[in-house]
Picture 1 (cartoon, rainbow, N blue to C red):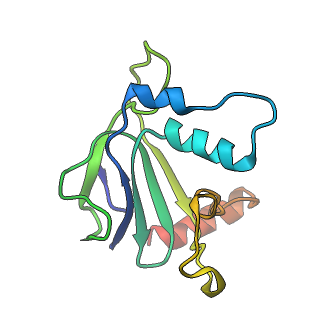
Picture 2: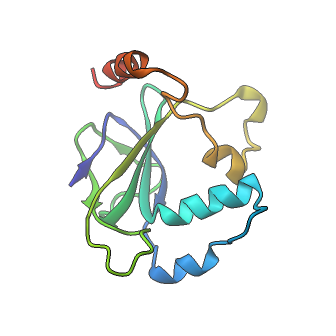
Picture 3: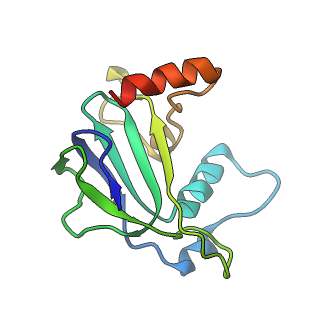
Length: 146
């Protein structure tokens, strides 16, 4: 099972992923940044995004199942079940190594963009520890997991 890192609000749920979604991936050398983000989103498969009370956004990707009560806008408590680990979003037909991609993004919101965010804004949020060395990454994570 995957569980909520902290109390928070579910901000996105992708539960209807199927193998046919791979046909929406666009290939080529000159893909736009937005298209690369769309491709990545497909490759995440079934997913749940949680905005914690501290403001981080946590992505749980490659899920197998997501409980029916987990829907956008609900408040969840730390430790509440968000789904089960799976392989959704993995295009290799014989792949069977269930796993979880667990990503933490910093709070990306800005007052100037309120009400006008688009797909590119959501998908390009900065990772919490992007550009940090190992020591800085460990310190940042200690703050999250307290």
